[in-house]
Image 1: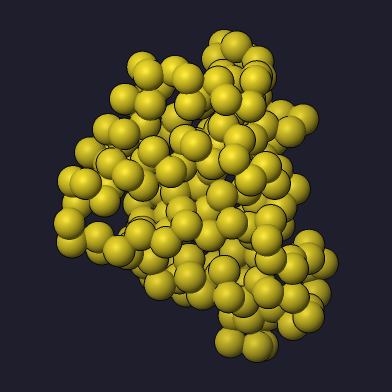
Image 2: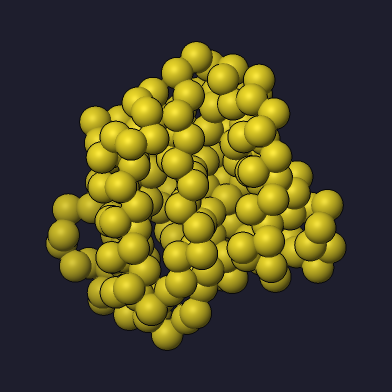
Length: 182
């Protein structure tokens, strides 16, 4: 099973990256038949979709001069995708949102696939804040449209840069999320 983990956080070692690394460690320990790749979205040159539909006549590849074709093809070739993002203004980071928007380029091809999707969102607000629900609902809509299965949406409340790293209960929960995709 190919698992792609999309890190949408610009912080090198913040809470989102810690959460994703913990999930990956759980997968690697318990799912020996899985090949996991972490893709740091913010390390690549991406641009926003301009709805030109050039991708529809270009084999599902964006015509803008950026690296989006690489990440979209990785999504296409993965069986499971885990999206991870800090919460910025009640949404995912702009960098991850660019990837999500560029998924339009292969929307017809994606609808022919069955994928499992995981979502991890890390925000400073309490878990009862609507920001986590808003992001999760958007991902549910995307999954329903594409015929994919959202197997987990895991919100985390963390303010300080090391809050997740210092929370053994949260690390345990993250380390067990592999059970939802296995």
